[in-house]
Structures are given as structure tokens and as C-alpha cells.
Length: 167
Image (cartoon, rainbow, N blue to C red; front, side, top):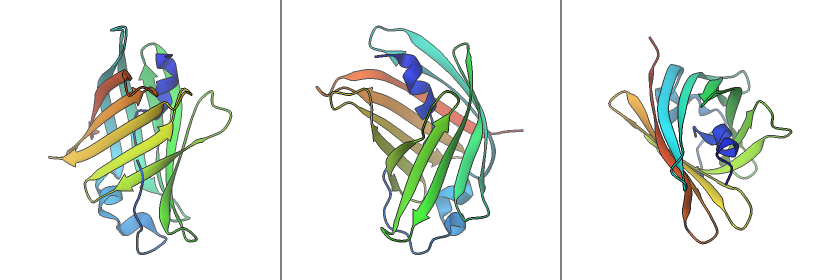
């Protein structure tokens, strides 16, 4: 498994229905608004550790979508990235789209969202592999867990990234 492929999925799961199309009143998005700094490490199945550093800002855009955008150092590689969460009025679910430098097209995620937690899931690496991301808000920080699981249920890449308010 190429650990570099995981870099674009560090932050962000599958979402339940929400009452309205504008996400500005949803507690999770309110809590992660503003400037943040993330630090952590990912380890692949061979034991190779890659350090992660992120600087990003979360904010509502003019269409009522929540956007998290910034830059990330993944080992020695620098990337720009953005996550966009928007309400689909037809399905009545929140959709998540992710993009980073070097991607031709954005990736989409299924999400589960509560007031203090988001879980993201998308196919990854073929052979029924999946990328799982879980972020929980606690005591003014975001604790993130990332794992890539192959079709046999084995973790190929895993780690944690902790985000704190900038400043």
C-alpha cells in the first residue's frame, strides 16, 4: 500500500439526515470553525512512520456548505487540500467531497455525523479496501484516527492526528 496515497484523507464519515440545507447551525461544524493546526503520525504495515502537520481553516461558504481548506506536510511533501460538506436536498443527507494537490478529480465520502463526532468512509486501494477516518471533538481539540483496511480486514496504514485551535 502506498502511504503517500493516504495523505489526502487525513481529516474528515457517513451522515445522517439533517433538518435544513444550511449547515451553519449544526453543532459539529460550529465547533470546528476557525483556524486549526494538526500534528500526528501514520504508520504503514512495514512499520514506516510518516509525520503529518496540517494548517487549515473551517468556515461556511456563501452556498451554505462547510469548507475546510489548508495545507499539509506529509513527511517531506507539501499539499494544499479542501474538504467540502454540503446538504443534498434530494437525498436529505450531507455529502462530503475531498480534493488535494495532484488529484484529477475529488473523492467522495459517506459520513456519519453527530454533534461531537464525524466518521468518514470511502473505497481505497482496490480489492475491497476502505479508508476510515474518525474525528471526535473533546476539550477544545479534535482527536482524529485514520486507517486503511484491506479486503481481508487487515490494517495497512493507521495513526492519529490531533488538531488544536491555532494561535
